[in-house]
Image (cartoon, rainbow, N blue to C red; front, side, top):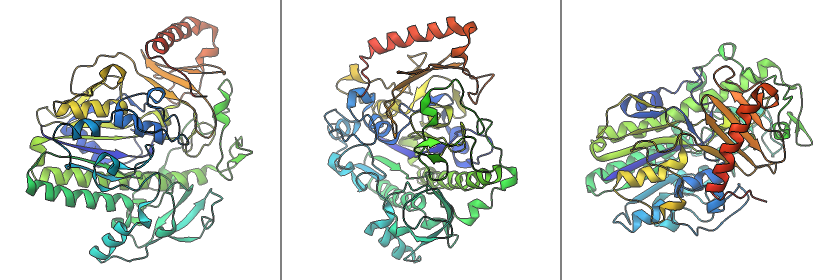
Length: 473
């Protein structure tokens, strides 16, 4: 192989839930290998995205949360690529949010606004609208607003160009029913245009596309909203979870209407109908983002680039919407909703339709990309990522959080059908993921599971020592 394409989505809603339509990802995983037990290295944007650049845990690279702005002192996979003939042929389109600067600091070409940002406010989006003959002032209608930011109240019509950062807790519809106005299709268009040029040039390349979506604000078009009916949408069994026997972090919440003094209001003040309405917008946004990513995959195959290209499709973390008492977004609890991620790859020298059960993670992505090109990091000893192109080395994987809105440190590990979460300075968690997939019963408090709890404590004690783990303070 001589090329690599990485498709990164953001904030996937409960990945692999049967009610959410993701036909393009389903088709893609039939072309390659699907890693069904993939977990986010850290279920939070900045640390996860940094780990996807370097194959390291946050306590190694220093970007512990979304507030710390640690400099790039470590080698990234872009540094390896630039030193091995790919300088000038690495392309990056979309969200950065992985630390200071942006992808151009690593000599990448493309479109990458620094920080979190919003693509709608940049001249590249204006040029895209003019080139396609679209409305130059696209708008979205807010139908549900859980943010105290100005203009994001129910019934407001918001110009997309006035959205400073794409994280306001709003649900609505992108007006005009034109999916091409959405940032996901804007980025997909840029990527497809670049792939056509790269096909003509014939040089080895890497291309990465990082969508802002599917992430709130959820503004899908009518086309995708019409794919779902509120009355058909199932509510998660954990929506009315009383959170007894759970660490305090599960009570952390700051969405307007769902919280008081940054604490989750229980029982949830919203009706089942209101939750189904929000899920409908979120489901539709997930399907829209799936379609945009699928367009990039289709372009690669239509151009014949698939014969020399490794393609990886994944996300940074999940979304806790409507789970564990009625949350919005996420914090630092380690639940399936935020840990589970899509992860699949296509390699021209492999059969398709393969299911791989290994404990995989998005931290494996940079090592896999380099391995596909016959390259590797200089200092592999500090890289926990493994190449997904080779047999698995690990029999368990540890996900880590150092806190988000709330300071909190926790380690999550899954093995033999159980998930164990070590919460620093709080109660531990143990769940039977087969009998209790929505993590409703904390078995760590049951004396009958003392031996199982002790087993996981010893396993994590060894992991902490082997990885020289130090919690962020």
